[in-house]
Length: 345
Picture 1 (tube, rainbow, N blue to C red):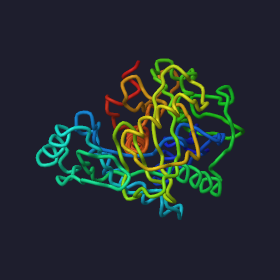
Picture 2 (cartoon, rainbow, N blue to C red):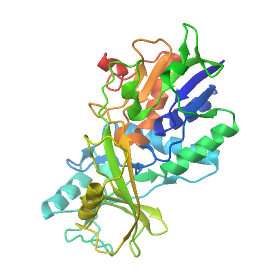
Picture 3 (cartoon, rainbow, N blue to C red):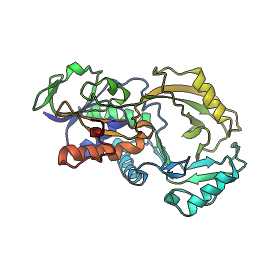
Picture 4 (cartoon, rainbow, N blue to C red):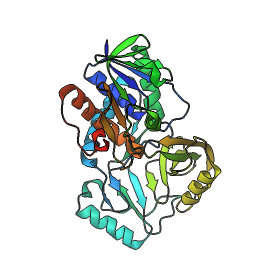
C-alpha cells in the first residue's frame, strides 16, 4: 500500500509529489495531461509586491524563502532548467508614483525588495517618468517544470496518465482503493474542477478565466520583466508573455478576440517596438473566494484532503503550503486557519 494518491498534476499536485518524495513517502500522481490547463497557461511569475499599494503580498517574506530553496533543488533532481530570476521594472505612470516608489524603497516593510535608484530608459519602452526595479522577482517555466516532473515520476513508476471519475476511488475506513491499488490517503489537487467534488461540499472557489499571448519582440531587452497596464515576461529567443486577463463569466477554455485586443491595447501603453503574436492561450484559474490557498481535510471523508485555490500566485504558494499540508497529515501540526479548508465548514 502506498501512502498517497494525488489527483491532479498542475503546480499544486506536482509540487506536493516532490515534497512527499523529499520525505520518503510513497505516492502515485494521476493526471490526464491536457494540452492546456491553468498551470500551463500561467505566466509562472512571482512577485512579493502588491503594486497598487506598494505593500508586501500575503506572507511574501516566508513564501519567498521557501520558493528560493525548493525550486533549485528540483531543477537539480530533474536535470533541467526552469527557474529564471528576473528583476521586474514597474513603469511609472506619474511623477507621484515615481516618488512614492522611491520613498518605499528607502524606508518601508518592502524596502528589501525595491531598488532606490530608478531606471530612466530601456530601448523600446515608453517610460517618461522612469521605472522602478523590484528585486527578487522571477518566473518558473511551468511547462518545463510540469512535463519534466511527469517524465521523472513515470520513470519511477509513480505517475498514472488517466482522467479519473470520482466513482473509481473506493473509500474504506483504512484505505482508498483505485485501479487495483491501495492508498492510505488521497489528496485532490484538481484546480477549478474541484467545484464538482462531493467530498468537499463546503468548498468556495471563484474560478477565473485567464488569457495570455506569447509575442516575438525583436530588440527588447530580456534582462527584465515589465509591468504597467499589462505584464511582459521574457522567455528567451526574443519571446515574451503578455498577460493576463480576468474573466469571471466565461468558463470555457477557448481563447477570445476580446482578450487579445485588450492585452495588445494595454501593451501599447508602454511598448514602442513592433512585435508578432505567435500564440494565444486560455485557462481557468482555481481562485478561492478570499484569494487565499485552500488546504486541509474533507469534512465527510477521513482519508481525503485538498490543496487548491492557489490562483495567480501558484508558484509562490505551492512549495510552502504543500509542506504545511504534509506536516498537518504526518505530524498533526495545525494548519494556519487563514488557509485551512475548515474555515469554510
